[in-house]
Image 1 (cartoon, rainbow, N blue to C red):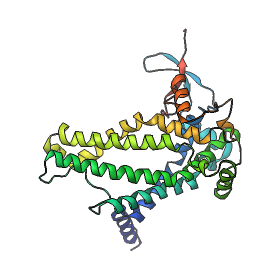
Image 2 (image 1 turned 60 degrees about the vertical axis):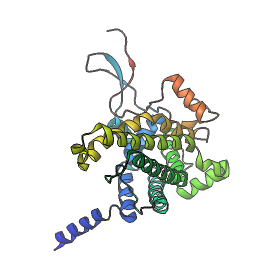
Image 3 (image 1 turned 90 degrees about the horizontal axis):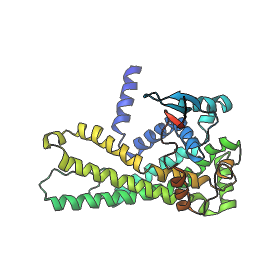
Length: 313
């Protein structure tokens, strides 16, 4: 009987996954599960913080390189210093940010959608002309951009707090030790604007990623896939969509990096001050600096990371 009740509960959850409550629960679970990965990647991104010296290694072709620690080595180092809690620093505000973003995105889409559906299919199989389908696609994309932007703006203050909490690992600060303390710290020193540090490059990256994803999926499903194959929604969703989403994420990654750096730049944390990081006049200045130094994709790789090629034997 207990097993039957557990199975029923699981089935109910899966059926309600598309509802606001189910989406919020799933968002919280996924955010918690990926927190160690997010924490380590952020430290690699923001200042290229490398607490473990690189070790000599070789590529598959035999070339000598200096290999930086992988995600697992980096995470183990944090765990040794701060325990498991070190990998989950900043989790609560990140969960709040993710859940608020999910809720706002769903609410805005419901409010502006004329069809009453949160997720409107990109390709409508009704008898419509190409112009009508293109117009409908453009309208749906605009709605999703508005919803995505609204969700990001409203949830960004908690994202800022989360990033700053995690980055404190570099200088061992305790400035952002709790949610209320962090809100007070930001408001007293930076005002309302402090809660929206780095929001412009983040907005640009998220919107550009959404446009690339939807545009590519529309073109692939309409013109690049045979009608028999495109009718197989499982293939279309789980293969082509995931590939396109990955490519869109890679293309817009520099904006994520710039956003995270601007959130911690010159706010009193060791990771955002000289000599770890220059003081930037704005996010474009940060972008130019990263491009000039060849660091626009810093932190994008989590496993096979190298410093430079070792010359000689």
